[in-house]
Image (cartoon, rainbow, N blue to C red):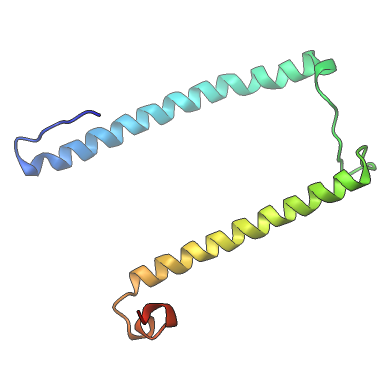
Length: 114
């Protein structure tokens, strides 16, 4: 853990700016690595295609995987999307309740009656 003391509490703005610049630089480095890495991955799959399985599910032809595995995969994909949407809506609800905590309608909710 790194501790950095401030001589004056007003210096906190400068620290925010410093961290903002540091995260921007880190993000730029990650983006540059990604730009270089994506073509390497793409061409490695093309060059060594014997090591990689072909597409099991396609929009233009019949699936090459077992029917039970296909149904399981589709069911889990649907369950994942439903869970993601439910958690997003739950988070939006929490944000709204947090923002409107002084409103009368929030105080009337059953879970706020504690």
